[in-house]
Picture 1 (cartoon, one colour):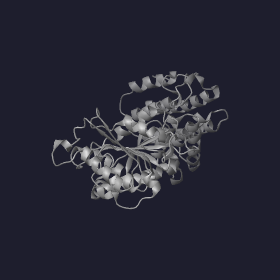
Picture 2 (cartoon, helix red, strand yellow):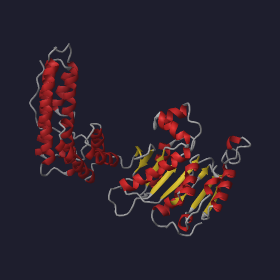
Picture 3 (cartoon, one colour):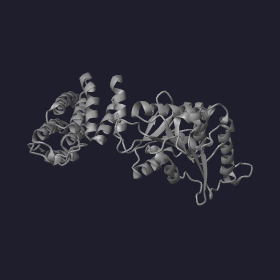
Picture 4 (tube, helix red, strand yellow):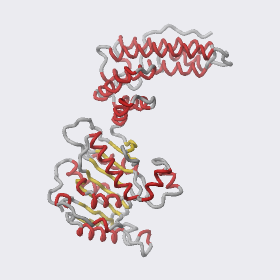
Length: 444
């Protein structure tokens, strides 16, 4: 018969905690050992009753408390692998009652850790979350967000993001949901994450810089990148985020999941869009792609200002079909832009040039980039009668002049194919994103 060995001092593998396992203070280590002991004791009951699933659940909780290398946990894991036979009929109901009691006791132990003096904020927040996860109460929900915020500020970013994500899955009270949603995102600082704008169906990929922190004294610069017909929104966000990181630019990268950039949404493209939108939203957006994209991007930019301290004016670039939203912003919302750089971009709406614009709006610096080796340079897909990038850019230049947007530079890069020209775009944007060059500075 398998017997649990007495608990001995353990080398802890602190799950998602920023301190090495063997560096935990003795009092903190012993408290976590008590948590593991509770689950191992309950697990022994599950083993006797041949409740394999419940026994494995107890193993997971013990590992969560003290790590998989602890001697009692390893011995218990071995016993779980050897369990066989059918459980007794009444065992499950009895186990469920004992499990509830164990959760309550373990939650109190974690709660004491979260309140204990000497426990640093980076781990304190995780302990508060562990207590709530096991036994949610209104008081624990109220304590969670402040504790996680302190843990995030102390450097436990990934652990905080994971805790916030798991907490959101538990359907938290409305008054703490927004704070947890922001903490989930903060846990992904330096990564590309998918979000939905408030008050609009627009989905977008967002990458906050590695050194992002809420409440900064100066607004965070923003680079909006709009992909072309392939709708590789996540890819373009990652590509620009990587370049921004290499140049150590303090810049937020945003890639809206638009519609005007692509062709018919059917077949494989329809499958791709169903990752971001449901059938009803796709059908509604198809009624007026340009209107959906413009309203959606405005909602995204307002959300970034309100929730993440982003700058009011942003840099925008659009590749190929992404030129549609880029040019729409240039003509219709130039006051929202710090600089614009269409790259091998489509343009098909000369009517956007109509209307009055303020001198400030017309001061927008614009760098239009095309490629000498673009296969769509003269004719799209080589089909005569379907003007390519250069004729479309000619039309865009004429429309910009009519609209009073005259601070425009056009560059043909001989060796460039049909490309987003990220390096050249970022070369143009960099002084604006760093705050070294103002919007009204001489250009070109």
